[in-house]
Amino acid sequence: MLTYHHHRQDRRRRFKLRTRTYLDGGGQWLELKLSGARGSTDKHRIPYDGAPGQPLTEEALDFARDTLLRELHLVAPEPLQPVLATDYRRVTLIDQAGGARLTCDTGLVCRDGHRRAPARGDMVLLESKSADGRALADKVLRGLGVRPVSVSKYCLAVAALRAQPANRWHPILHRYLLPAA
Image (cartoon, rainbow, N blue to C red; front, side, top):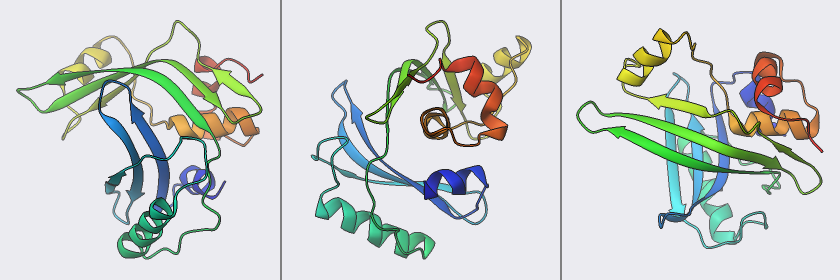
């Protein structure tokens, strides 16, 4: 729960550790996403053959500990273990000329081994990524009256499955996810 609370409190130095499987042939990775002191975000990753949802391998634990210590000067909390899974389908659209990307996530299901919280079937979670935030997709969305919201699927899942406070994500949580069962 440490990573959830740090994200919720907007701690400047925080991290998220996850395994990620790309079903389209992109392999499986262990990713350590670091948020630094000045709002920077860096991703470090290694190929990972461990089973999702199972305890991390020693190599994975060493990678996480070493990277946290080297990059954020943080000692990794113990134990580092899986707490939840988010499954979804993603389509990524790329503006090759402008360096922008738009990811479209559908079919999100959050689960923790005891409960699950699926997303509504009529909703798509869009994420626009560009260097300056002025991609064509951003302009079109603004023109449609869609305002950007900062959200984390991980934080939504924790709030929904563990009944944690989710003040700033509350509207999205109740509009996008169905009640956990």
